[in-house]
Image (tube, rainbow, N blue to C red; front, side, top):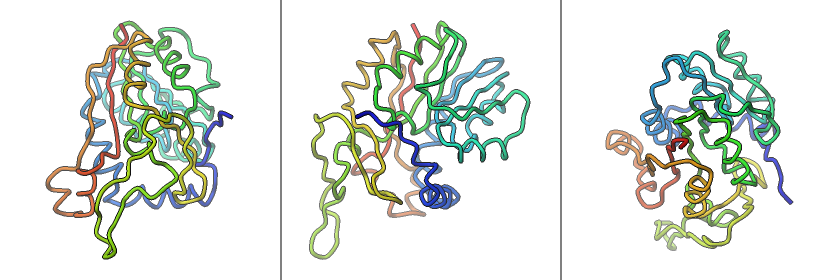
Length: 247
């Protein structure tokens, strides 16, 4: 059964997640977001939509980069409440709704973004089809997801170690078996959906989206020196970022 994931309204999860995001050195802040921001197009005078906007920080960044109007949506009431508290601008609006349920006017957005949210959605084709219809001609979609190498083995130990605890390798498994994965992260039973890279790429292409860039981000040398544990990302990529244009 397809389930709309709303783990961020689990109070235990939300509090622990907020604690992680507040740290200076976390994967999102030091690896995913720097590369994501480098791919943001010229937003001067543009209308933008941020799917899974969380606390609204990226949506606010779009305003800073010149967007005239930004809509941030998130299934989590906790996240939207936080976003509304942090960012109060007339041209920035937040809506508590699942993307699958929101009604969007055709061709109404120049830029649609989603940071680490699409892997929570069960029907990727329906989601991308809806995004494509909502984009204007030559509009840009920019999104990041958990890397398929990572989501391939949800539900088991990711890193295999020897008897001394030294990492031997990353245990990628069941890569071709697409569908729901359950992971115990912060709380038990967090649901994500695994797709192969081929499925992701072909879903974009079949919905009139041309891929402009794909990035498997790694931390900078400076960050690696400060946080040696981040070297694991050189062995197994945590994220995949894709930029595509509406044909």
